[in-house]
Image (cartoon, rainbow, N blue to C red; front, top):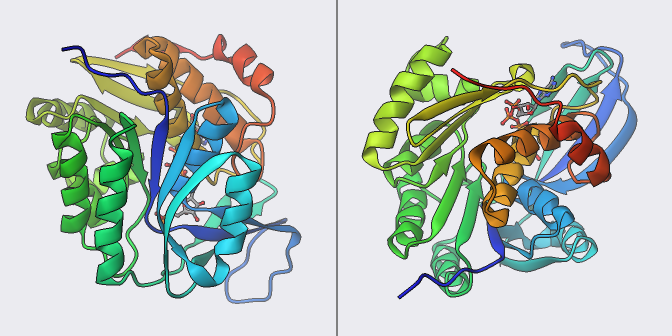
Length: 315
Ligand SMILES: Nc1ncnc2c1ncn2[C@@H]1O[C@H](COP(=O)(O)OP(=O)(O)OP(=O)(O)O)[C@@H](O)[C@H]1O
Ligand SMILES: O=P(O)(O)OC[C@@]1(O)O[C@H](CO)[C@@H](O)[C@@H]1O
């Protein structure tokens, strides 16, 4: 019997955040800094991925947890972007994360701890994932874990989805990354620093990434993408290792660049694109993300135009 193909995507955000952004000429520690152009965005990695995918035209559902005390900012984002809300409300507030961009393009981020997730909400998420799995193939899980969710619990959810034959794309860091890797999602997307930390090689090189990625592939992870900031990204798939250079753009804020890149991989998967077409598109999408504050697709024609400028090479 052929596998039923579903068109939508589920983005899982366990630890959403209100990103409080500001720009300033330069940030000086230990003294007063005055910020201009301040804004507040309903964000968090999974929610950023969902917003980009919804803007591209994907039927997008978000699940995970929302603090009930400031859920309204997120609810507005979901309704403005036609995102289906399957988030579980928990007591307390989503965290505020501070994102300060200097005029030279350097961004300083301060991420706070979020709410604590009660055990009953963990069960509720399990049920929600099970329900959504009846009508979706692609799940993207990204971001850190709030208090109350252990890395082992996260791995359990990934394992559960994979055991149902679902495609799970995964982006996290630290212990959550290690634990999630053990559950063998279809794709992981650490950045250079996160992957180096996981390898235990503080200055991991592309050769190190390649060697370890080959080993991960042997365990069943089909795709390893390592994002390299202004150097682009590398992607190992089916033994083929390719690199895309980043596009040359004026940097406004790098916050959410990795989320846009991951959304590009999801979009390529949903469209059934080749590896090369998907990679070029994802890089162009992330380039557009760094030239704005916050994530989202405001000009798809510009992104499509820039796809052909992306330099891709086997390495
Ligand atoms: N300075 C830059 N110039 C051009 N493109 C960039 C720049 N920084 C990032 N990008 C693009 O964004 C992609 C993801 O960037 P990065 O590796 O910084 O992700 P990340 O650390 O996961 O980001 P975040 O956690 O903020 O979402 C890169 O692969 C690249 O295509
Ligand atoms: O603390 P986490 O979950 O690792 O990252 C959260 C975060 O830094 O990631 C997004 C950018 O990728 C921001 O919107 C958000 O504040």
